[in-house]
Image (cartoon, rainbow, N blue to C red; front, side, top):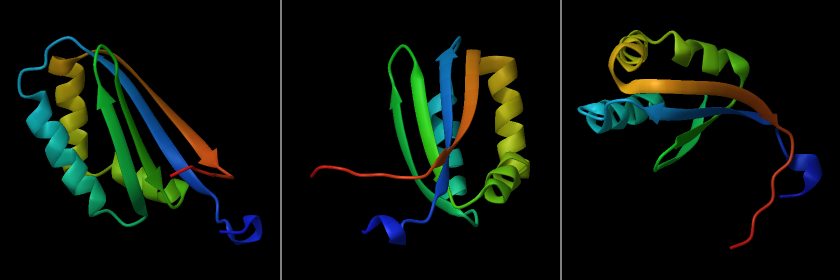
Length: 102
């Protein structure tokens, strides 16, 4: 892809520390499936050890806002605050360039 062909997109970077992992993996997997069905979703990357890192990529800010307000996602967010998370941080970044090595 040439630089002139690149269309900027957005990343939602969610980092977290769990207080309780009981039932977390199931809901996290369900949220990933649901996110993939949302308009504007591009992809997702996740890793979890002491700190969980989940980066989802979106076409635009409006898509991110719709996902944040999705009814099932709102329920999962509430459960996270009440049950699973010791702490978390959400960062939203605009991706203006990318490159990779394979």
